[in-house]
Length: 174
Image 1 (cartoon, one colour):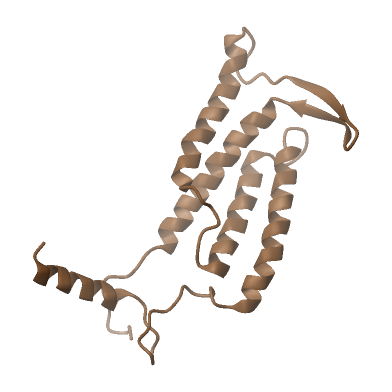
Image 2 (cartoon, rainbow, N blue to C red):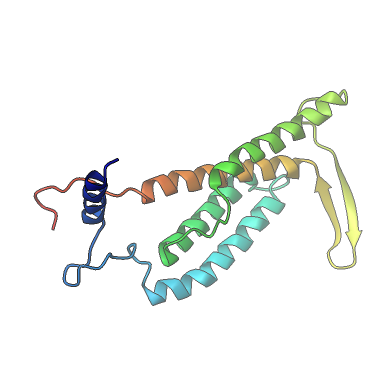
């Protein structure tokens, strides 16, 4: 690309970015500068994540599981992004999807390779001084795989919708 064309391209890109009406400075994402939202979102984020982990933990025996826990986590991550203008995930969401699919598939395939039904779950009980007796199940691994798929796909969809920058201006834009 020629230097003249590169300069024109950067001017177009700068003109397309949202600007403050009086100062001309680039504007931050909507709501990301609101101190009330930022403060409240920290507590809400923590509460929603704890609730999502609870749903994931008890999902194979009660309502909940990987899908709803993944949606709850996605909502918490969306709230964090709205409040802070950046993602709370430190990994590319696209990487979560194949790991989750592989974990879910292997969880179902392993019993089959051992001569049992596909997706047959084993379970048992563990007693600890802190929690007492609780049940463990291999279905939890399947739920974790579904959880990773849902979080990854939700954040990919939201990220692609949130990162849209208009390149054309219309008559009503100012």
